[in-house]
Image (tube, rainbow, N blue to C red; front, side, top):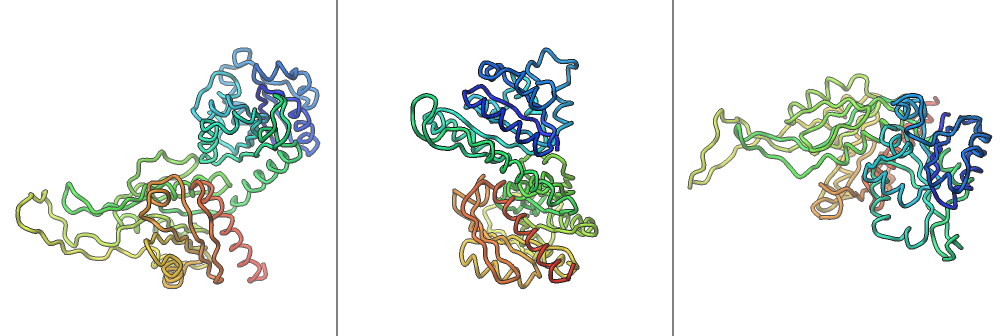
Length: 399
């Protein structure tokens, strides 16, 4: 495995030398990259000797103007240890003023970050907010240890031991390969059901959960097809995005792409009703009451459930009450293998929020509760359980 080891400027930089040695010992090809501040604590020659490769230090002393792009494309994982408060802030806000931060913006693979800093800097709200931003991007944070710090204070902020960082790297590498053989079809966002050429019926879904699922599946090696209702989100990297507007359009695209899919995740909040006949012209406002005659939209989840075959089918149940009962009812009536249930209507989780808190209701009868966390983290846990389902099915089939 080709790994970039980015070393930030702090007294803990000396521990990165042992980390480089352990990674090389495990057979990884390690490309060390040091900030200017890191070189004040440890010389590049140390890492060159440990890795057998030239250490990258200066953005303006390189052979090619796009070397940071080439290095980003040639390596499979980025590790930053130690990650100072300054480095973490630059990464969170997209600042790129040296080789390491410029490469970070060009890197599309998994990222492992091991912070190290003074206890007050670690606990500062700005640092906590920056770390939350990086977690939402799917980066793995190796929490610092607690103890006596170089500044003379005691508390959290010590760089995690190299062995603990190697363990986190191994877990991340293993996780990133576990969906390589899967084709994952995901629906996300709301649908918009027109009332006339100007107005429509919709809901509060932002698409954030579905997009987090798509990003996670792609990062873990799957081919991902994302069928998305209208949202204000950038398309996830490495994902085929098919935009739709109405429930009828979503059904059409789901069935068109169902054939090769091995996992189907129906995270979209599809409108339940649409206007039976849409006027050709805008309906003018009058003082009289207007009645709308609405018909049910297609039940896409139920239709996929009838055609499921060997696929894994994951449904979503957004409820305002009776969450467990409604999620279980949906699982059984739609022939799902798992239903993700979450309470909506509040301000802290669910629609429009970056956080979620869900239950996973399984066909086996088990229920797994996932506490409040960023949606990207929730997405990872969902796919962890999906893979457990896959293994249990293979075991039942004797494969």
